[in-house]
Amino acid sequence: MAERGLTVADAGERDDLAQFVGRAVRLDPDGIVRLRARSDGQVGAWASTGFDVIAARVVRGELVPADTTVNSADLLTALAVQRADSVDPGFPVDASWRSALPPEDGFVHVDDVPASVLAELSEQGVALAKEHAGPQGPPASLLDSVVLTVHGGGHEVAVPLRCVFALSGMGFVGERGDELVRVRATGGWLRLDARWGSVLRRRHPQIPLLIG
Image (cartoon, rainbow, N blue to C red; front, side, top):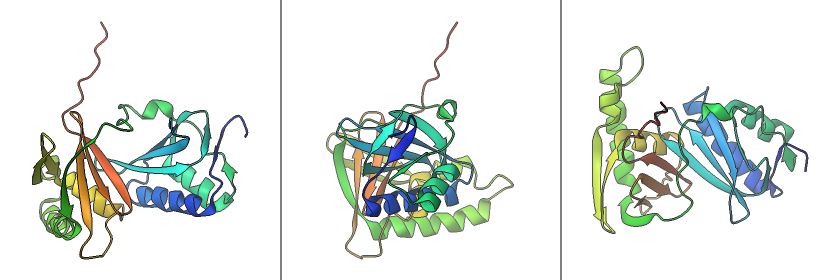
């Protein structure tokens, strides 16, 4: 592998990653993707969505360097245009990723929610967003509104509308009526696992690091 590159040997997984990044670009054209080699020999991809929610995907591959952040559009171009086993993911913009990544494991299963319920909540949210949208889009108070609360595994988890929007906008929920979305959590993170992918958000505001 070159000094800088992402290698995904399986064509199906490359196409899957390209679709994932393409959806992220549609939601956040100026967004970024963080790529990181995992301890299990796979590569994790975390994409901004424009909703202050992270979308996640994992593929079998190799990454050099082992942790890098690139512009979503550049990564999409590399995957969709070059269509090679190994590509340059784009110019590094590591300083643009200003938060910690969610952990690879340690999530507790809280509950399962029918995908149809989340689809309905998304439709209702879109209607409200159109009604209350301003020059900068929907108000943060609307996006932060809790639309679902689930209990289980020792956790009570509030799911805000912004997570439902991100899940729907990324196309992660399929059309099968019996489909379920799994709600998982750690002390610090909320995770929604759907058929086609996951979205994650911090459960509590991140405390800034003050250096004096």
